Length: 324
Ligand code: 8YV
Image 1: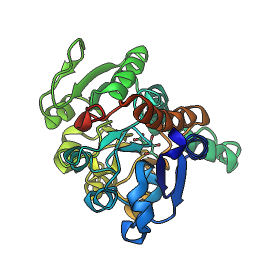
Image 2: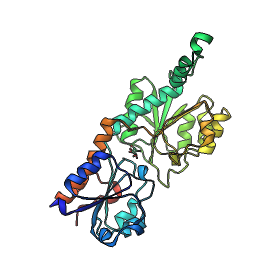
Image 3: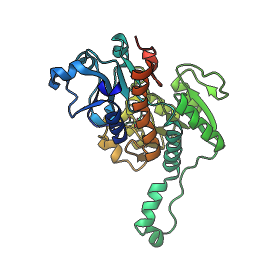
Image 4: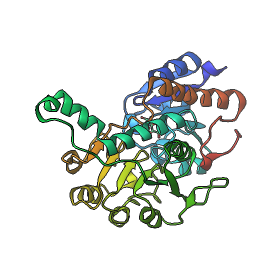
């Protein structure tokens, strides 16, 4: 009987997830992430957690997991699960799931939109029209182009590959850097990020935020990208040295950047806000009604699958196991 199972939702979560969890399980919502504020009978009864750390702010780490001795599964809203300590959860035998696949095409679509907008300055051109400058001052200044460009993708997972397909359709040459070469891909593989940046003039980062990827896009990489270089980030802000990026944009080390993600969201560094060659979006990569509904459903479907069949639909690699 799923109704007897307590599922905790700490902080904000997509309303569709909350509603379906409430219909299916014994839903308990709490505002705070601080486990020391949970009542004893709650901590003893929670068997599942559904969470969107990006919305709630806090980290589902050891203290959180240890405070819930009966927890079996943490269902994360989002393909990136840097807000959950999946390694610690695995050590404790706790399943962690994320929401891959259902957002792949949307995020790839958004990436191409952000890239085009960064290169062809569409938002700035529209502002120029709205400010009456077209009529007063004449044509909008000429912009850089995608034509003849080589694009490097950092992170050739599901989303990276969906971006690659779109770039091919745009007639652009694609290369990539990834932890390892991906079987079945014909794109040039570069074993180092600097080598990739040297070889291309557009770099798109799609890597998750981990210890290994922290600030990998640094001053040296941006220098290698060069003065016509375009940098686009749709992955995680933590992968970029934001101070080095702002300096590179300001100093003409690279030409422009399009950023959907930042190291300390929702705070965007003032140095980036001041730059007209930075296109800045408020983390909207997957943020359509259609795709967020699919993500919200997958969060709940993972819980239902776990508690009714003893397996998860989309476990993260760290915790790929079945119910004891
Ligand atoms: C999420 C994302 O919607 O999936 C991810 O990793 O970054 C977004 O698609 C976000 O984490 C939740 O607000």
